[in-house]
Length: 266
Length: 265
Image 1 (cartoon, helix red, strand yellow):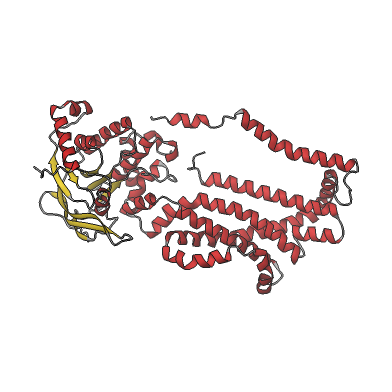
Image 2: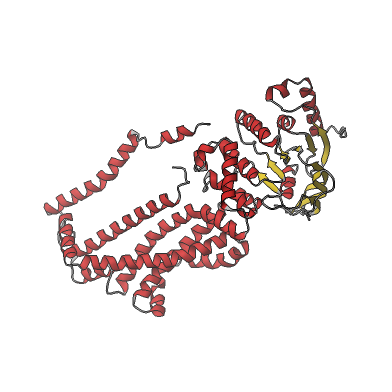
């Protein structure tokens, strides 16, 4: 029928331009690392302040063998995952509700808009005051930091839906619950994922920050303690681990998005 | 407000003194003004009119999507396993997050049918619009014409008393549109369905309908009610080469252009 095969065929072709883009994406960070290593070996970079990449990797291997690094990573990951679930769940629910109901939106949007731009790390002392110095405050700060972001992107996802979808639903007898489940939720999912991905970045920033301030475990704590004992290489290990965690989390969300949204074109 | 009681006699659908106004910045804007007509069971009734004449508002009132400001709509009583009205919309007619199967099954959710019956109806209607190989495809993998066929299959799957069509072929290219007109006539003939078909195309009205209602510019009134004289089945070639075709569409145009001849039928 009218041209279904052609759309498929166009996919998967890699043009010369795309191949060059991929090459550059790998070559540029690799080039920086090589230059860094060479400059360190030549003594142009002072190893006390900027250790060579090989030194950092060596320290990382050592810290992994002692179990110190895996421990701190696991602690931080657990906080992020729990806080993420705790923040994103209610945010999606409330965001859908605000997108669907004008009165709910009118009542809550001013509060959300006011709370959204507050740097969440500034709320951390208050959260410690309420939840104590234990895990609850770490999980709490992550939840708070992504809540508003996910809420707002969910709401705008519903608002951006073409009114035609709601018309079809109502014309075929959908009640409020069916509209929620068959239009608002699946229709807003792409935007919800955008919110989750941005939120994941926020969550990592906030958890490392929170661990720097008041914690005895986690990657942020590792960096802070390394500073106190002047272990510059260990500080770099902490930064590297954070970067890798961010990359892994983004890749995981991308993977989930493709699994959950098979209906999106390409 | 619309009432849902069987209209007397052979009429499937009766509209009486229907007026509707939308709230506007400077007071209400009248979209429909005293529209009255009735459609017999099994009749294919086209509604034409200039853009903004309230055709779509009329259709939305019939579908129960809008409560009219004044007047009544009388529809057949609801029978089990069927919808009273089913709508085929213009443009966006499918949910992009649902497969063809899920889209066509959408209207059956509210009918309380057993799963086997839902499945049977969906597969039957999808096959009738020629999409049997695309049951599990998503709309973005289909052409615009195939998406519109999905919308038509969804409407027929609910076995409605009245089929409401809001310029369903308005965004299709000419050839796809002609093909879908043929398919629609094929589905409709023998189905006994009452159809109200809103269109801006005189050709489409002349080719498909038993009868054409002409509406005036805003606020919409029914200014003419014209029987379509062509025999069925109506192949594109036969209708176009009928000597009466030119005169008929010219008459529709005269009525539309508002030169004011009162309705003869």
